[in-house]
Amino acid sequence: MFERFTKSARGVVKGAVVQAQRAGADAVTEEHLLLALLDQEGTRSSFAFAALGIAGRRGAVADALAHVRRRGGLSKADEEALAGIGIDVTEIVSKVEQTHGEGAMRSGRGARRGRLTGHRPFTRQAKGVLENALRVALGRGDRHIGDEHLLLALTTQPGAVADVLTEYGATYGALERALFGPAAAAAG
Image (tube, rainbow, N blue to C red; front, side, top):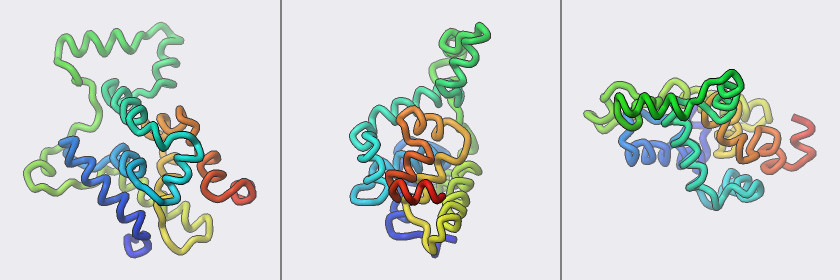
């Protein structure tokens, strides 16, 4: 599959590994893929981020991801749904952190293999994004997998990254329109 990746898509994958290393993460996650996409310049995904007003908001997106991670992967929509039935997630997180320390509910903990060997494996979800990028490309009739396909694939996988993208207006449809134009989005 990687032989189909464009130079920019390979740059995103390599950038995700760097993001994971900087964060001291044991594995590369879909969050690292998104942050690597946000760091790209002169690519289709960077154009889409600019078109949607996200390009200059990398810090805010990273903060939103950290917020979700601190709450064990719960998105704002999850928090609102729980609040609707009387559960205050902020209070729960606070009590858990008082007892077990700050960040105790963080998602993404795993084996320490990456720290010991220097190799960071991709999580099952991050591998799923790469596989979905292939599906997106094939669905569009493209012979290559570009950074734009990786970005679209991030929106197709339920979870914190897709939720944060949605909060910033980067849904599959909005990104498809920004990347390929309104006619292409209507045809897809």
